[in-house]
Length: 187
Image (cartoon, rainbow, N blue to C red; front, top):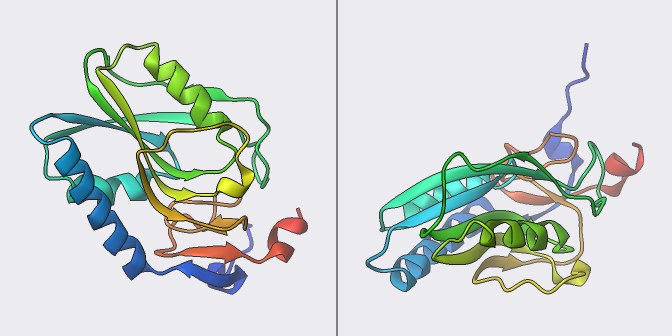
């Protein structure tokens, strides 16, 4: 039998409240709608972490949108560090050739995974390819990434909530919080 985790007790501080996130998502949706006016957009969510963000973002975009899902991994299980090895676990379900694509990411830290994904998707010949991330952690960047839309720039802390996880937990928190170091240092 698994031990029940008190997710709230594992949070050292709330970095972004639910209200802050929802306000910023609405602003991002308005900006994307204005920039892409008159076009149909295909949102590509990078599972699993970006799913709550994409669900809220697509409702904030006033354009016709299609969605597709990819699952890409560079982390191994309950770890806080990217392995650098990127694997596509689930590919797109339809062609994006000639489409206007918006990659929807939960967080960009080293940039290695997203850099790989951008190169991979460009090979599928979309009409345009843009990036929207909820969180940007530039202190950890190893490769340059041209991000078109950023929700929040955050410090180099391990965060969970609003889709972000540690060991597949905490994704359902409605806010983004800093996970107490003793939670992940025990692993």
